View: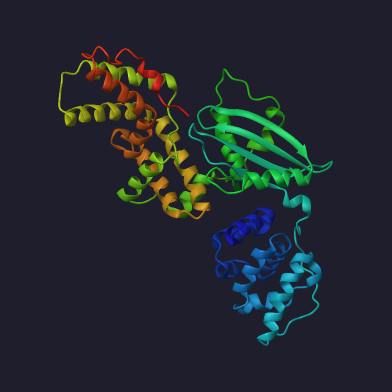
Length: 401
């Protein structure tokens, strides 16, 4: 975990200090300026106790600040677990070598929590959106009886809550599961605030189809999973606030490349909608006289543009923009800021309207329809060829995740 992520975890664990932690945006020096000495000491103790490596990184920055050095010099080792004491001893050794007077005993600070083993298993994670638009939300909390409780929800911003399971398991098994869930790779999950996960679940719950009941067991835990605190933001809102709306045309081109390489999208419309659109394209192509390749490409481009305007209008555009911002958050947290900015630029393009001229919308439409259109085009050209395949059902070639 990086220091900014560790500080975000501290903000979640120490609500009274969150308003001082978050404005610093991971900057150690600004953090020291934002917090009172008592609050800074509380945050430092929490990091040493729960995230000792990140605590040491923060200490290295604070050692060069008068206030920070004073706090570190006066921190009592007995207030920390073994791993934190080891780090603090190294810090105090460096301070002594610089002539800083180190207090060997100081009253332990009053802190909200030093992080028991169970508390380390408390957290929330989201996986990336899959090609259909679905993703997994995982919430873990200590089980009052023993071990830990794990909630696993599959959801979609168009189809609602798709599945739900709740497990009670030993801490070791839950840790093993989380290690695999976050173990790297494009589909690995990213840790988020509880409130962010609840905001995501609430959004999916709001679009649950009236003719499909919620998964068994979800109702019992509905409030725990979807009752986001006031002011809670989705991950996409967090990254938009941090990076802005995105950039210029170059960012849009980068977003198109992300779609074409399968790193985001295509989150296609329903098979019914795509089939209807394909049928219109079939009719247009079969009714066209022989024209040049360039003219045919222009005709197909216009058909794609009409389809994009139909699919990405109103709620469709808003949903695509939301999914792109959610994807931007995961890229951002993995350190790929250019990809995050590309997604934000694409989201802004959907917000702006006219999907027919939006290169990202067109790329998302071409992916599922491209093979069928190619087959249609080949069929039209081969109508006079007795060996041709014009009679084959083209709509079977629609590519859906």
